[in-house]
Length: 529
Image (tube, rainbow, N blue to C red):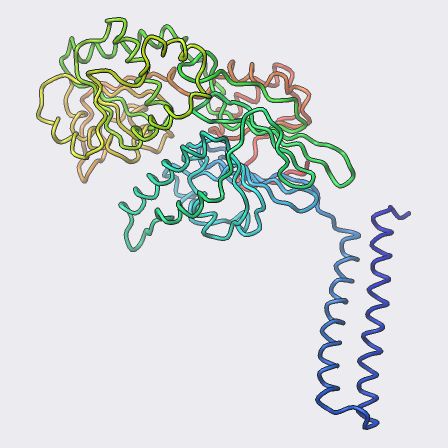
């Protein structure tokens, strides 16, 4: 029994057969005329070549049509990054009309040997075949390979929020600069500043909460994820070839309710298929009041009681602005000890300037706060440092101070030079305020390393290492559940962006609350939707 599509294919194939027959008759006619002397040899050969090419093309099309009777493209999702890992977010959606949509294109940040070539190669797709890229937010593990994607052949538009577009520019320029500085003949940079300049031309900023038609049969809506400035969840409304509408959701990184600066996360519409993060799927964070008190205690213990230095390794984007805002609050309340505070990160300074440019992302609490303090990211003893060399200049100083420096995982940036000096003295403290993968320097300090290798030396860890995960911009298991609890009827949930053992616990937790079909895809796994 034939369906309508099959009938159309057979009808088209019949037309191709008719044209093929005409080409064959034309070819034979030219040969006949040549033999009878009614056609010059050169004209006959030209006709024969022309007709044979058309015949070849028609035969290929005929074969393609018949093959398509038995092989049709089914909508599917392939997991090309952040699969049983926390970094390198990248997921490929192929529609049944063969359009390819990439969700995020992040840099892998870690040292596992089996991932050594991840950032330089494209084993799961060809960049030139991607039609659309959608970026959830501007953290490097979600946007860090975009310049390489464009250089390697991607020509489509890159959709994100307006604030993400602003932040992506400075984040990618900083990434390019670091790569060039750390490159050598054996390890060339993935991309340079010119590659960033080129790729930024393809970024398109969109507002929250509005449906945008991306192409025929595909609509996109961003909603505020509350993770960092401009962060968004992704909802796609897909009209399939048979007219059926399917919704796919991508949480990206789920933020936390009642956090400083940003709006609370906005729940996504109900979807048929959900891609959900898992970072803290087995943890519960401290409440806001405890966090502010713990920060103040760390400052007083280190800078007043021990007369030491407090180093806070922090991501330049998001974490730094949040800590500065909290210190500003403590200063206005008269609780902050009179010690100098240094923000030693050019990227954090640039990111803070972008934060000032996008008040549409602020929550009501910050708006009210700014009526009394128009500058929540600055006060008299807070110093933003663009020039290099602060770590060495402070090394011999015995004066207490607070230093906030990037990067949060301590894999790169000026924080490493600060660690080189600060870790050696027991009156100092390193306050770890966010997640760090186990193989990074930050992960090693979190796990109690007695010494670390920095600048060609084994540096002893005599300083205190304190951990405050409550500063994380990722929701804990209860916050994430509250965010996705309206998705219990989803046909399938895919857990990404998490360590596998945590994902197993997160899966079990969700199942206990009524979620049914949950997958934990491995890198390269593909699922039909």
